[in-house]
Amino acid sequence: MDLKKAIYTRFERYVKIDTQSDEKSPAFPSTKKQLTLARLLAAELRAIGAARVKLDKYGYVTAELPATAKGEFPVIGLLAHMDTSPAASGAGVRPQVHKGWKGGDIVINRKLGVILNEKNCPELAVCRGEDIVTASGDTLLGADNKAGIAVIMAAAEYLLAHPEIARGRLKIGFTPDEEVGQGVKYFDVKAFGADYAYTFDGAVAGEVEDETFNADGVTIKIAGKSVHPGTAKNAMANAARIAADIVSAWPENQLPETTEHREGFIMFTDISGETEKAEISGIVRDHDLKKLKAMERQLEAIAAAARLKYPLAKIELAFKEQYRNMKEVIAKHPAVMGKLLAAVRQAGLQPHVTPVRGGTDGARLSFMGLPTPNVFTGGYNYHGRYEWVSLDGMNKSAQVLVNLAREWAK
Ligand SMILES: [Zn+2]
Image (tube, rainbow, N blue to C red; front, side, top):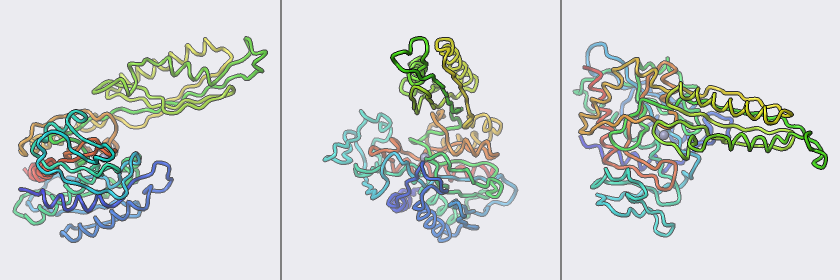
């Protein structure tokens, strides 16, 4: 099965449509232009013969591939997101294919000095001899997540053309606004009707993910006491300075810029302040919920020390749950990862199970009752001008999808 050509034709068409989402927009989907791709995908799903194709008022595109095998099998969902990150422009994307990369520099844009190689991206190393796709140096590529959409569409077309491949019912779902953290907010898990699902929204070939961070938000509010600076001795509490004191008391080895793999952190994302009042917002992240709570107690201790040091100020601290590690849910359904690992091996790859240092739509879906790990699509450097995807990696991803469909009908 070689779907490289079919995948690329679709991929090229999808990345040329600007679908950037917008975190400041109160609308859903956050930008109307995502619907351009949604409408195209709905039409294409009908064209390849998918059943129950629907584009709903939120911009969710859903469809079904009826079963080819006789018997009762779990219904499997295949998901990808349509939007691209607000971090870089997604308008006027001009994809280029660097055929049979032999190592060395991949010139994305000589003029702008956008050059990709193993030194600035060691993840490339596994792609020697493969066809690498990049943008042209002034936009992101949009492989995150149009690689996933192209993979699902090409594999669906292939499966519909090959009814001799015995499989159960498959559900397809394309969602907006993943990059602004709202992707599955209105997703109707019950109506979707899948028992288990997979997001095709991962990185290099072989990587699968069943773990995300546990995530809380934190707000620290400081009420100060303003007095004329000339007569402020033992009478002033400067909220802005107390805020700076609290932020700098947090250990430097527990920040996003100093941690990796399974190390957690607190990041202070916003600080605003004057003498009378100050506010600090931040995020708390750890794969281990116990460690997350321990970090929160550590920050509480810093606030308690600040209360003693600044008795004239009022310092309040509040945590808010954002999302939880999906492993907690997925581990209760061992077949979900078992079938996936088998499907990856059948594609000739050694699976790498890595924890995501972030959240996924799958994490939210898992807690909404649909256990949803994440599958690679063959790319890297998402959200920027150095983004790339291997066409061979996308092809492997489609193979995994077809293998998965077969595995679930065993
Ligand atoms: Zn993504």
